[in-house]
Amino acid sequence: DIVLTQAPLSVSVTPGESASISCRSSKSLLSSKGITSLYWYLQKPGKSPQLLIYRMSNLASGVPDRFSGSGSETDFTLKISKVETEDVGVYYCAQFLEYPNTFGAGTKLELK
Amino acid sequence: EVQLVETGGGLVQPGKSLKLTCATSGFTFSTAWMHWVRQSPEKRLEWIARIKDKSNNYATDYVESVKGRFTISRDDSKSSVYLQMNSLKEEDTATYYCSVYYGSYWGQGVMVTVSS
Image 1 (cartoon, helix red, strand yellow):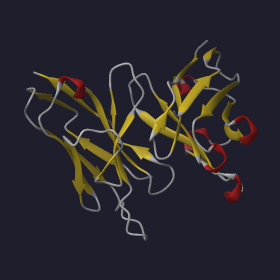
Image 2 (cartoon, one colour):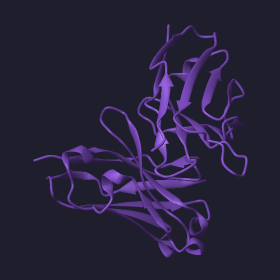
Image 3 (cartoon, one colour):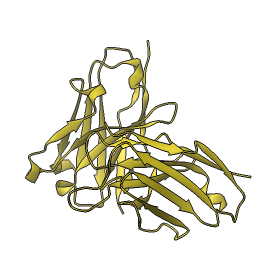
Image 4 (cartoon, chains in turn red, brown):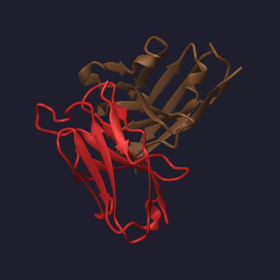
């Protein structure tokens, strides 16, 4: 199974500042079709996960452009510029390249 | 508006069975690949099953930990997907979500507690 390792496990950010979360895959997530199958989700307290980024760098519908995704075949970064109070929660990366689909352990974002 | 609503959770003894239902609306269910994902009390997310559409022969896949015990199925006439869970173990205790389109949409989740 593909293992996704997130870092850090928690991050504390002052509102208005930026935050970055890393996700490292045990295998390349680049498919034969040239698609990198890495996704980012945010789970706000008491809510279901919501999609932020699909295929490594594409912003999901309705997601503020303060969020951005980047990376290579195995190393990925979610960046949140100008963090707002509504960004608090746990961020997960996930791969849909092959089954079983797998998730990272999550990164908890808190405000200072 | 896309909606996914899970039902059927509850408290069950180890070794017993439970069937979850995910009723959907707001999208073309018949061509969608449906997934079940669970979240442990420690907040770990685990994908557990997927069922493809009719054109792909309703093919299924499972995570190893539930193979032979869980069965995913669907009824396109009811726009619903199901998860039959047999031989439940304490480690199956989790909140179970259905989702679609690479996690673009999720249900609100349903809790399953396996305990004697």
